[in-house]
Image 1 (cartoon, one colour):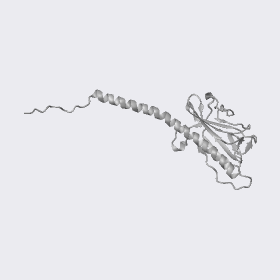
Image 2 (cartoon, one colour):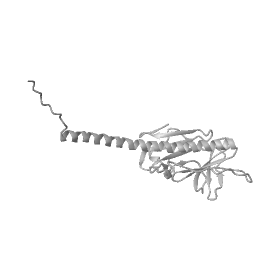
Image 3 (tube, one colour):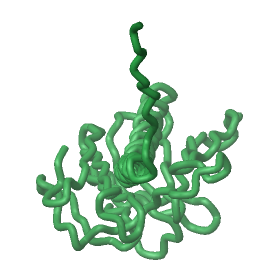
Image 4 (cartoon, one colour):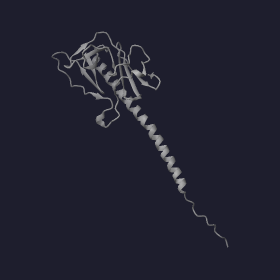
Length: 214
């Protein structure tokens, strides 16, 4: 007679289950730690792209419509474009402002205009980094909001915006613009956007922890 060997199915011990759970929790924690900075950087890049889009739109409108166009940076994170129509001219529909990482859509970790003077100057001359507002451009005294103006040639000049909305040209000479954004206390979210006054060329920079990189 053949005797069948008793070979019951072996299960997992409590210690083995605890080890597996510990590994799962460790990997999950590492994933969360890596995802948070990536999300913040993505939000910062999106905010930077929003600034670039508005600046390029303003320049294109100035050239296409043959009208001066003002860009106003409203603290903490709003950009407004206004076309300066001539007296008696029928104005077009107002351009809606945009926000860096729109909080109305549930975004809580929003970028804002802010200075990053502690991070040093940009790697090109003619663009300052020091204004607490994050907007560096030559302006007249008495302005209530940092503004710049694109002329019909596409050049950019510094302006000042009064409470009545009137705009005075600082000069007819082009002025370079540097806009710094990010989240307070988080240098990894620092971004910079520059505009060459004479050509209207827009460039972007990221802080990589050591220096500004285009």
